[in-house]
Length: 369
Length: 236
Image 1 (cartoon, rainbow over the protein chains, first blue to last red):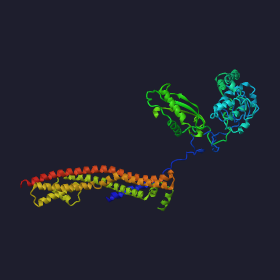
Image 2: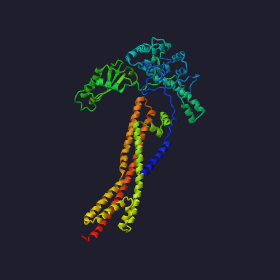
Image 3: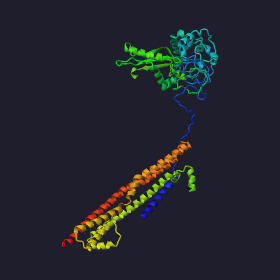
């Protein structure tokens, strides 16, 4: 037995010695290949408001102030262009007439220049057509500040252009705060009297514009086709060589605030806020008993809200439970619930935007209660 | 030893470093398991050699036994030697046989019973010797992993307490402690796995040898019974 114990001990000693040698320096994991990436902002990117990365935080989200801060309605991209385009401004060294499949509008050429000269704008005015071109833009203008009273804006915007002189520089407007909803449309209307013909000629504008545009492509298109032929020219003709103009059309006068390039998700009501809204309304929702025989008892109502959470106008019934009997009672119950539940207390910073609560769609299903 | 202790400060992850860093209980577990492993292997070596020896001895004894040599002569040859296994059984039976005849035993049944008893005692003693210490292998085989696991749990507990103390959750802080704790389980498994395998192998070997001894005891008992009949029948 002693011999076996000794031999066992010797074997263990040998194995341990071998283990000490081989396990002494485990190769450290190779981390050399991983390059460290500089991270500028560590934040929730799923929710961002429009603004600037380097700007300080502020109460109201706003991008960098644009040079021509007339508020243009329905624009998404930040910039000073006449029309809302996605491309970014590229400072042009020489203003050259663009040859492209789509003819350059006369009114747009001055815009491509890096420094907007006020003299060029009047040029466009004598021509009746450009005025009408921009006319459709004037119409949605009220939606930039859609909240307060849309009808009031309409009324205001009509008289405003007429007294104003057509040559008002845009600069004073930049200084003016654009908060007041009533003054805003005046500012918009001032710079050029574009809105003036707008209400009157809206119907005819698109046709005129087209008729003016059509000859130009025909002019430019034949020239290359005479010299060359084949697919190459076609491709050349299709290439858009139009110089990128000054970014988008959405004006901004506010101090730049911290934010991203575009607003993502931040304007949306959160799940808990939607639940709170739902709960507030459902407290007042008393559908009649005995609605089992109705095929589709779901009522969808769209309501427009102002910033104090009150309903503006009449809630629109998108889908009713039926025109007669219990269906109408159900629809009325839903309508009553909405009207009685106001005012809705929702976060003010999420009011604006397409995801905001300026318009709320509610589905009422009596089976859920 | 001082040098090694200094090396520990820089998170030494060699085997010795891991052992040295470990806490008191984990160290104890590791040392205990190492000792158990040494003892296990000692038993394994001892048993493997012993069984081989026993098997050869049985072969030799059976060869002599069945060679036609007279039992008396064989008894005289073996009597003064240290015997194991079948030899011991043969000696025990022959001794009883001799004593009974020297004292003038007259009852064949009682003599047969006495001889069988003596052989049973010898057989059980021999099989006990064969199976001795196999129980330790079984114990280590089943308990070794648990002992190692105990060390690991204690070690990991200690290293988490260390995290709580240092308030650093960096993996580099935790890793040595966990590695050292896992070493305890590794040693437990190193001790237990050969123990289990060896236990199964050796116990079946011991069973075979015991069965062989039992077979010999039965055969020898039959031979002696025939002898008793031959010697006592005329007188009875």
